[in-house]
Image 1 (cartoon, rainbow, N blue to C red):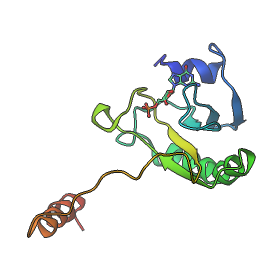
Image 2 (image 1 turned 135 degrees about the vertical axis):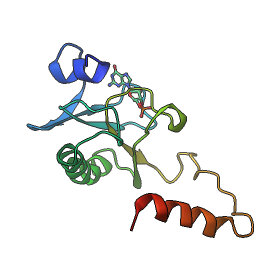
Image 3 (image 1 turned 60 degrees about the vertical axis):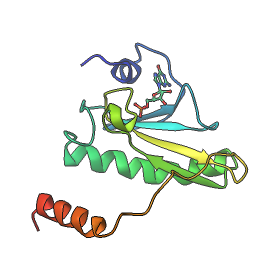
Image 4 (image 1 turned 120 degrees about the vertical axis):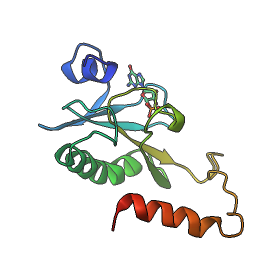
Length: 136
Ligand code: 5GP
């Protein structure tokens, strides 16, 4: 793969790197929701949650855990969102696994996702479908 994140990891495209190790690379999002918005990317290519190896997932998520408080502190944020978009329907634009660390401020105006209650009996139906898929 030679997607935009691959090029950033290889240094073929510039980025504002905030952390790297043998398995991951983290840099500032070029179009941040708030300043400090960071992307954590495994060096080894995968498209998203559906094909990432357990090894790469663990490496990525460990870095997310370590960076989140540092980023929140560095930009003086009040909170932080950890987000992964998987496939276009979920807003994925770059098809190379990555997790967003988004600093949040009490007054930044971004609201919680909209929700709506289940219809009568629907919650149990959905729960049953998922349990069947999970298979345990
Ligand atoms: P997605 O929607 O795929 O989860 O998010 C992709 C993110 O990558 C977007 O927030 C976008 O701003 C960011 N992005 C896309 N191209 C570049 C780039 O060339 N450099 C940097 N630093 N971020 C990028």
